Amino acid sequence: MIVWIFSYSCPAQIGETKEELTHRYGRPSTYNPKLSSLLKWKEYKGVLDDICVFHPNNRDILVYFKEGRAVLFRFGHKDHSPMTDKEITSTLHECLEKLDWVMISDGGKYDVRRWRTRDSRVFAYYFLSHSRQRLPSMYDGPRHSMLVQTAAVDAVYKKCARDYFNWHKSYRRTRWPDLPRE
Image (tube, rainbow, N blue to C red; front, top):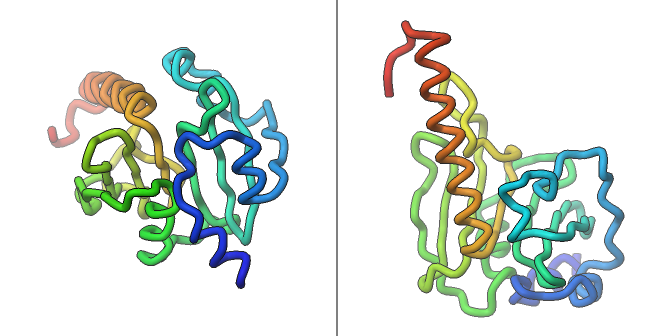
């Protein structure tokens, strides 16, 4: 229990090196290259170049790097259970020294809570339960996990989501023309 509290009391992970994160969370495990990874997406080539996974205290923390610095985190419980509001708040505060998060959305139509820092340099998403949409959306991330990413990574994420949504909308119209329009 004391280790868990300590891991939540050390802010400023965005921009840290793998060595600094190893000091915080312990030795990372090697990421299985057979698993899906944003490193395989051509859209992310310029903003991500390395990946590792940490497993502290019943959590999985997937970290992407650019030029040796952490730029994207995905936090979640090992058992994929929901994060509590207190855990979500602690995770947001864990990622940055300044605690200046602004909520953009509390869930809404896509069941995704969204935040940004006051200066819009970092963005965060918490994926709630399954979307209420009839068909999956690009905003459907791993259930009950939280993404925290720099603005550069977020710009790519939003572009991919927008492209996917536009493709999905036109595909749905041709495949299921009787579905109600959004």
